[in-house]
Image 1 (cartoon, rainbow, N blue to C red):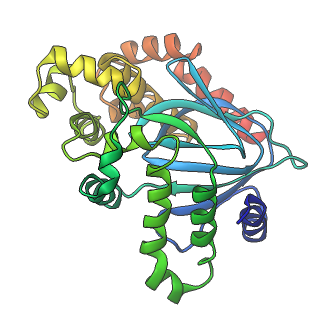
Image 2 (cartoon, one colour):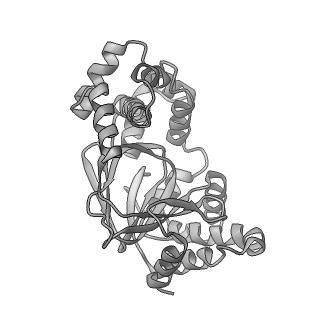
Image 3 (cartoon, rainbow, N blue to C red):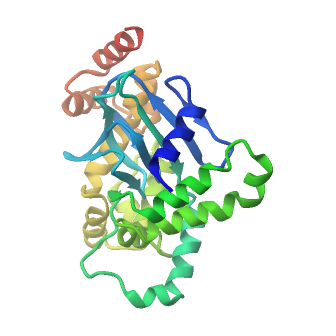
Length: 296
């Protein structure tokens, strides 16, 4: 199977610059025909595979660029900056976005740990990473194509959808990012649970101690393992998650003070100060910039 066949499916299904549902749980197709500057976002556990164009994601200053030669895998809820600087009508960004089902991925990791695959061992020194890129190999291409063949076939989706998602997940787990992904979804991954706790309680004044206590870990050990998984200290992560969520809300038109409270800030002056330090603009300037960009 070739990526060209996958590209043909995406082009057939997506006419305008938009993201559409496929009918397959967690699978969307998208097209972008205009450049988008890097802006704050929060990636959820997912895989993004491009068949045309290129995209970039920046995590704590580390730039991840990907195109039709490699896909990006996000295994944790991650505050990032992302954009499509080169998209145009003549060179559109085309791709597939797959939300990762944590339960299904964990089941596969458990099965692999009890099979002969475990005998291959995990490479020493490889840590779970929230964001990584992997080469499009034949197994990933074949599995993705077989999954997308189900589009517009409701009966096939109902009967075959779960098994073909498993096939795609297995291709990811045995690909370039497989070692890191397996560590992330391994049973008892405490850092994943701590981030889920933070995401569910973003309005509350969550501290590093709260996150460490939630998973029964000392502050020092938690700090070390958290940074290994996310490349950020817990305090950097908490602040980035809150400010990125707020920036997204403000760009959508939500009042600045409401956005600040929604992500746990009780002081509007502190929020404005930290927002400007991170993005170089005050929250109100940010809203005006995004409003003008949307009208352009």
